[in-house]
Picture (cartoon, rainbow, N blue to C red):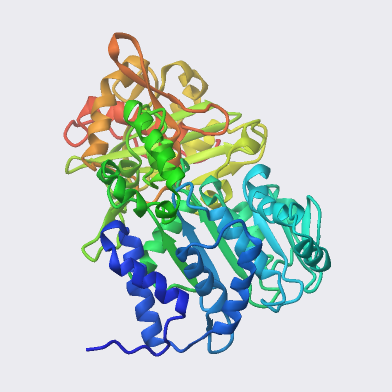
Amino acid sequence: METTYKTPFPKDVKIYIDKIKKCPNVVNTERLLLVEYLEYVFQNEELVYSEEQILKYFSYEKYFPHALFEWEKFLFVLHYCVFRKDGLPRWSDLFLYVGRGAGKNYYLSWEDWCAITPTHGIMEYDIDICATSEEQAMTTFKDIYNILENETDPIRKRIFKKNFYWNQEKIVNKKTNSTIKYRTNNAKSKDGLRSGAVNFDEYHAYETYDNIQVFKTGLGKKENPRTTITTTDGDVRDGPLDKKKKTALDILNRRIPDNGLLVFMCKLDDESEVENIEMWQKANPSLEYRPSLLEELKKEYVDYLEDPISNSSFMTKRMNIPKEKDDTHITSWENILATGEEIGEDGKIAIRNVPDLTGMRCVAGIDFASFSDFASICLIFKKDSTYYTIKHSWILKKSRDYPRIRAPLQEWEAKGLLTIVNGDEIDPHLLTEWLQLQQLKYKVIAIAADHYRFTLIEKAFKEIGFDSNDKERVKRVRPSDIMMVVDTISSAFNTKKVVWGDDPLIRWAAWNTKLVLAKNDNYVYDKIEPKSRKTDSYMAFVHGMVLTLSIELEKKPMKFIPIIKLGKG
């Protein structure tokens, strides 16, 4: 039975869909899902587009170094030329996730050129190209600038001078008074923007939403606002890109409404596919048109096979299969995610919540570098061979490292994971007060902290019943103690026996921690970067695990001291 469409596909959309259907074996799952999704939309929605307007847009191809590829025309038509019945764009936002070398900046330069022309038809439709570095933000801008600046044909030069004004800071279409500018990080300086469209280039480099939100709040003041996100994968985990990828997959699988987001994701379906060169097209839709790029990838692949650690970017950025830069992370990112996520029977990601542990016995791990910086406590419960945790952290706003930390601290505080402390230092009594509150519900039978820093908290914890002279209830952790539990902790991660719940703070801390080979071929933990990437909440977990594994938490009877007092006297 022939499929009926409420709206027929635009010509360039149908061309690319037909192309995908003819060679599904070299197309990744996400693009195959996109075809199914689009067929559903066009079968069930009344949409509006003008083939005449599309042809007028594509008349600008003559100004560009080479013609657009079929996938680029496909995306542009859907993003800029297809509208709902009420006149609003059907897909106001585009998520373009492709392997390095596919030409995402070339596509952006095309899209931005078209958006400021009379063909688009919106006056003062300003475009902001955003990235975390000036060099990256300028890439697309320079592509357009160079077209205008380097034109040698006298007729085209006259056309450009008549229709455009440009310098190294902005490009203006004189007829629409629309401007293209590039922007970088300093979010505070971007208030008052009146953007028509915003490009987020190399989205993987964003660690927080601070700048993203500033630019997005500048939208809506012009008709038909749009955003375009272009990126390869990267090394930042649990940030804006990972969250966008989850949303994108939910849309493609039609688990949630698309909310105006068009998803175009290109990646290997499985890491093993890298062994078959034909499969590389799954990550890079331009590869079939660019033989020189294919030759470059072949060379990089040889380097990757010889040294996968040093050449991890081949998989991460060329194939969009994230790989760690080194082999010193405490465990894989998938294992860290599994502390708070699991795949449900319906295919959706479900949160692994910490169950109700009221009345259960637990231990408390404590870690801090100094009370002028960061501190954490982690309660550990063992139940059915699984280690459950409840935790809290404190950070001093006056800390010298506070401005360097690229993490959403205020967001974490709003979630109750963190307290941002005003004052000259973190008072140890903040930790003991939190612990006493937990003792209203749980039986905290012992505490553990770093041996060399314990004197800084000794008095405060003695006040609530944890005397350092009581070796059964207070453990001063030495590096040799950590060496003895590293393998057990690694095994717990591998077997998914660690449950933190949905806690991005401790995931961040764990990903900031590395394994370091110490004496006698044993491992200890250390910071990957000491200033801006804190590890305290993870190390509080480690200290708690040292104690948990030494006392058989589920069985050994130990004295429980109830609440003595709350606060300082």
